[in-house]
Image 1: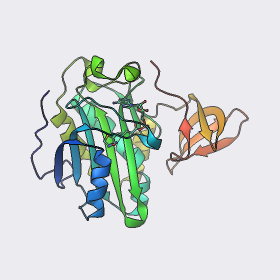
Image 2: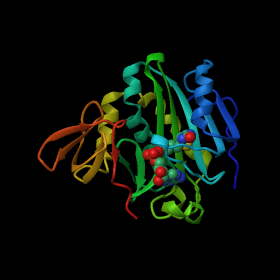
Image 3: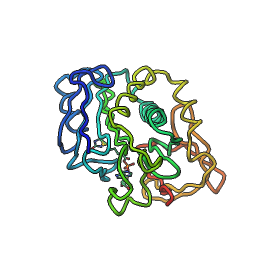
Image 4: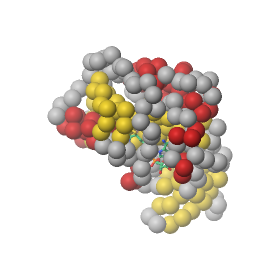
Length: 251
Ligand code: BT5
């Protein structure tokens, strides 16, 4: 394993960079820093997380030293914070494609897939009223297929497993620098998301308020909600925070 050696002080978002050997969750570490006033662009990156989190209490697992597990603090107006999920997913796709010969698609709202396997997940914890958010990104960069936990072997991908070549985590980290200008450009983000929408035209199932429903995904609307036509022909909008899509990456 090659440890990351990011240049101290200059993070990929041009803010301070905090590089930890191990922490519970980089999102928790970054939230503490944000509460203490850390500036826009502060990035916390860890070689290892002992309690990496997904959404809704799920777990994020990554072998030490192979993935990028990082969290960034952004201080932006509320409207810009709202479109972060889509913007960050697009940014991660572009970073991946910049460092490896892969094509990435996005499973709404913000999973990044390579050939139907999940290569990255995004966990955004926003405080819109206080004007900041923590963007957590777990990106499988140099993980070898056998290094994934057994329950993920059929569903996860890394840039290395997808290409058969080593991929430098520092290069991937540096590529994420392209985020910042994009986060506030609404039109560009929606267009870029639509071009990568893995669910477009797919049958999906979701659970809202305990009730399971099914229908066909028809892309996102201008607010970033997923538009679905139910089997009964009704058009509904799904908000990321409220629904759990049953469709998982195929093996
Ligand atoms: C996510 O949640 O995909 C968001 C993951 C965010 C992780 C980053 S790492 C840095 C920062 N600090 C944190 O503590 N978290 C963030 P969700 O959509 O709920 O997906 C979670 C599911 O993805 C799990 O239940 C597994 O099925 C799968 N999974 C876990 N680890 C994975 C991996 N390394 N690669 C692919 N899939 C994984």
